[in-house]
Image (cartoon, rainbow, N blue to C red; front, side):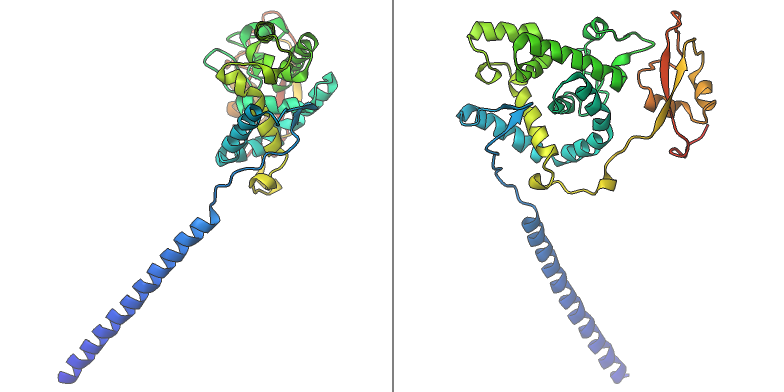
Length: 309
């Protein structure tokens, strides 16, 4: 009996010793983990590139005010990592649609970054009523030939809205004299920029005193251009397969009313949700089309969606 008690006591002491050693090891592991976290996550001041430009027009970075404003936007957008990664992912999906339209109109490729800061490459809705990737106001859309009503809103059609953005930007460049001022006018309006240039007796965006939004506008565009073209430099790590891609589609011409888009979608072996993903400009579950206008509805090719009606 005494032998059994001694064995039990020894076993208890052994268990306590093991627990003590385990606790020490855990404490060291936690400490090492914390040190590793500290070593892995560091916030660095950024070195502003000596030469930055928008559409071939250089930023006057030797001006201390311009330098500080550029530094701010690079810092904000570099260390907003989740948003930055989303921009890389969406750019792979939408830039191939935007780029050839810009090129066709002779609008510099850098303007695709204007779309990035306007909407984050989403069909955003602003408090003022601007909509779509290019954030076009209703009056501007109608002026440039887009249909905007409760049934159809072509501001949500990326190809058509990019065409309108190009027309607006070319007119702005012709009126204001530079692509930088044309981009600023996309935010503040052609007349707004013209008035401020005249009031302040200057000819360049970087010499203007502007409100917060328009004053940051060009620096945000250039910051996103710099980051999205230099992923490694700014610490963004991803594989090509991590990025979003477009689902191939074909277009179906429709020149009549459509009473039920659910049934219409099912006739192409997709559901209503998928139809809307590819045609966000269709705002209601039916198409009025009293004028017998010719619309082109995008249908995804087979094999890309598992959900069936």
